[in-house]
Structure formats: C-alpha cells, structure tokens
Image (cartoon, rainbow, N blue to C red; front, side, top):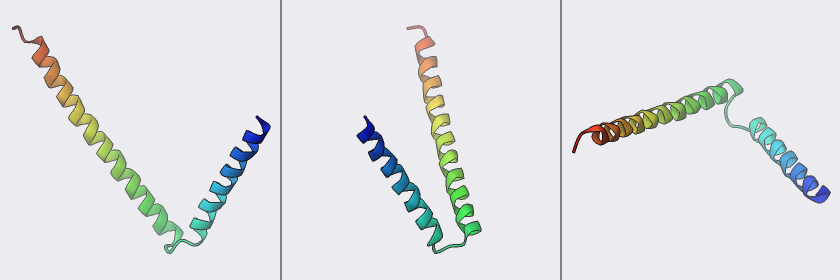
Length: 70
C-alpha cells in the first residue's frame, strides 16, 4: 500500500506542478483567464439547467400520460 500511496502522491504533485506551469506561461493575463474560466463555467451551468428543465418536462409529460385512464 505504501508504494501505491507514493505513486498517487507523485501523480498529484506532477498534476499540481503542471497546472502551475500552465498558469505561469499562459498567453493571457490572469484577470482575462479568470474571466474566460468564469464565462465557461457559467455556460456549462446554463446548459446543465436547460438539460435538467427539458428532462423535467419530459418526465412530467410521461407522468400525465400514465395518469390518463385507459
């Protein structure tokens, strides 16, 4: 188990160093990068909300269909 923990710790450390290097050498400024990330996160959340609402409407239609007497 100790060997596995060392491997996982090494992977985590490598990933963190990679993220740090990407941020240091990014072609955009910090505020611009943060703005772009926030915009993308908002887009993803909006898409998720739209998909959830569409699915809710589908399920409500199915429920109404099942409620109808045959």
